[in-house]
Amino acid sequence: MDDKIRKYLFDIQISIDSIYDYIGTKRDFFEYQNNKLLRRGVERELEIIGEALNRVLKLDDNIKISSSKRIVGLRNFIIHNYDKVDDTIIWGIISKDLLLLRSEVKSLMQE
Image 1 (cartoon, rainbow, N blue to C red):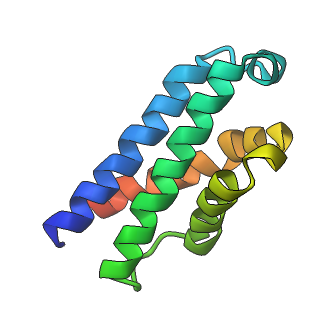
Image 2: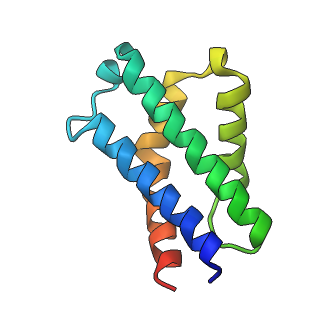
C-alpha cells in the first residue's frame, strides 16, 4: 500500500478515536446536543475523515471502504452547510457508521 494512503488511513483512524474520546463512554445524545464545543469537535473530526478519504480515493479509487462517497459527501455538507447540520443525523453516524469505518480502516492498515 502506498505510504500516502497509509497516512490518510491513519488520520481517519485517529479522528474516529478522537470522536469516541470526545463523547466518552456515557454517549449521551442530549449532552452532545447541548454542548456546542463537543458538537464542533465531532464535526471537525468528520470533516477530517471525509477529506482524508477523498485523498485516498484520488490515489486509489478501488479502495474497499463502504459508503466512501457518502462519507466524502458528509464532509462537504458540514463545510458548506454548517448552519443546516442535523445533530440527530450526526449522532446516528457516530452510533452506527463509525464502528464499521473503524473496522474497515483497521483491516486496510493491516494489509
